[in-house]
Image (cartoon, rainbow, N blue to C red):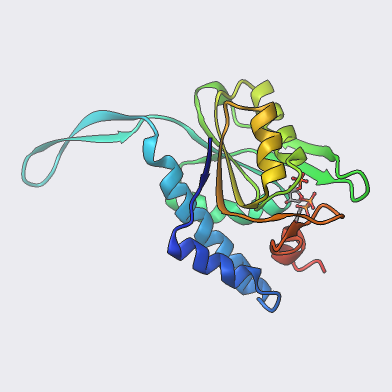
Length: 206
Ligand code: PRP
Ligand code: URA
């Protein structure tokens, strides 16, 4: 399933990020905020269980979250989405997957992986601002599945139909959430209109 979360606040913040004149500060702050807004929507159906607590006035039957939530940023750019989500879910565990895309072949290459235990029972959110060819997302999903993860969401800011199709073909069980579905890839595998190289803009490396 593909869901594009084109909420006016998300679209507004994304427009600020797309602007080539946006500073590193503006880019990072808006990425943080959008990631939090997306997580709020995506966690709408997480399992909860009934609990009873004593308020100052009376006993109250209410509910609490009943699942581990694991955020999985794809390094580097996915790191820019972690704080916004962790602010909302302070007990979330964080895995790290290091992948870089070969500039010629566009194939993803793995260079790091570290996971918390018991991914099989967790609600897993793989986060990366860009879904271009879908190669990195597919590799990351395959990696967390090998660790036992079953309940997986892919959360990206900007995607293109090619990337969405690639993930749907390889991992039809994974729901994909985007803030925007853009038009296409250019000949170098960059998203148009997109926002440029997300990692470089987050970390100021270009
Ligand atoms: C970017 C982006 C994704 C990937 C998307 O990372 O953050 O991980 O490219 O492209 P794909 O869908 O074609 O795989 P990049 O490899 O540039 O690494 P970086 O985050 O370290 O800059
Ligand atoms: N990775 C990026 O950072 N930007 C794109 O447009 C495509 C892949």
